[in-house]
Amino acid sequence: MKKHLIIVLLLLLMPITISAETNRKVVVISIDALHPQAIELKKPAAIRSVMAKGVHTMKGSAVSPPMTLVNHAAMIVGKTPQESGYHFNNWKTGDKRVDIDTVFHDAKKAGYKTYYLYSKENLGFLVSEAVDQATWAKAWRRQSITLAEKIVMEEKADYFMFLHISGLDFTGPRHGWLSPVYLEELAGIDEELQPIISKLLKQKNTTLIITSDHAGHDKIHASDHQEDFRIPLIIYSDMADFSSLQDQPYTTYELRKVLSRVLRSSVPAP
Image 1 (spheres, rainbow, N blue to C red):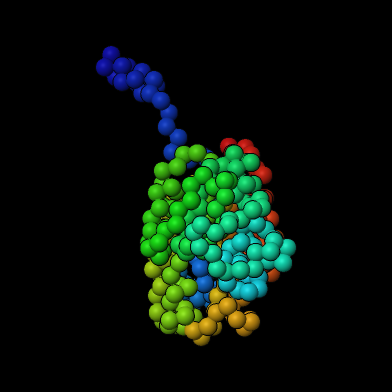
Image 2: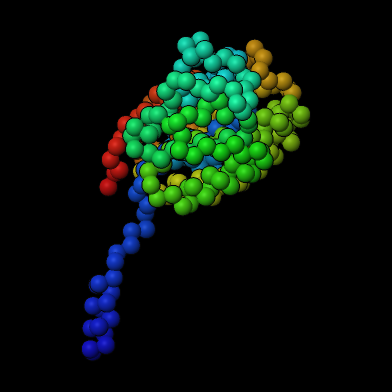
């Protein structure tokens, strides 16, 4: 009897462990050159799991010209190329970087630790003092996804992460947008993202956005063809209501405005 009483007392004195992580997590995954029709054709399981729990629109559009840096700049500064002056796609390390406030500044003001993982050198243009950790992942999708997975699995502070994934932007021009090889590349990206997506969907105080910068047609992109502008927007969040975006038009420069809904929420939900 005494032995049982001692065991009960020890259990009562043990610290209580809360399994659900309640730090705020805001994650944007930009899959370079993802045509929304590829999601319908390949039915990537991880991406579709976000669609099932959240909202989505396949009516998104790139700004002109539909190129990588132009549209990522629009996403991160929240302005059209005409408003920001960022209508170029060429940038290399050592050149002048972004000189106006970005979504990373919004996140820092709201108390988030900020991460920026990108797979193309020209996206280094968007690194600023508001980015706590910026990494140019040179090994296509695998390196950037591996780094992102480590953050998602281990970070305990509130964090905002922008993850850029390359791969489709090379497969499309070589093999054709929506070709079998292109769709298999998407399947590979989806499979590697699965642990990240699965983890985030199980946590509280989470916003996950999956989108893209541009698409293409045949083996062409960055043209005036309407298919080059098509992009998806997929959102899961327990921090804000995004139901009004379901099946609605959307343009890349609106991402910062979308994110402002959750970055303004300074106190984690119970």
